[in-house]
Image (cartoon, rainbow, N blue to C red; front, side, top):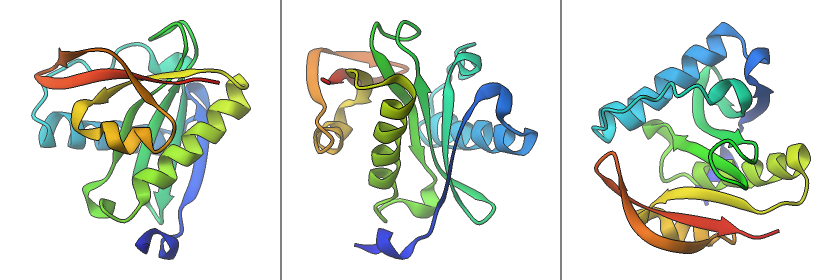
Length: 154
């Protein structure tokens, strides 16, 4: 796979440890993907970021991929991974898989061996299933996009 040829620098930081440049890159990528590409008008700045960890994969000065690691009790009773995104520039290179593997490792490091719940876009179910996530509950609409909760048990 092509992803073996890409070298990323991984950073995982608490909100208050982010630099201005990192925070700007995160907000820009989230807006680029969720608001512009997916045409979702929603309040991305939801006051959860301050309590979360922010996993970034950098390729030189470009933020290539990002995920928000959410402590238990903030979004769900379980730990959660949210705002999972890759830049359009690196899609179909295996970057999403690299991001998820790092996200799972960081969740274990930060929160221990615990179950993780995500709100997945329905089309992405097979992707998350590769990492041990199983669909739970009914499909629901979030900002005009069908989602389903998925859980990876400890």
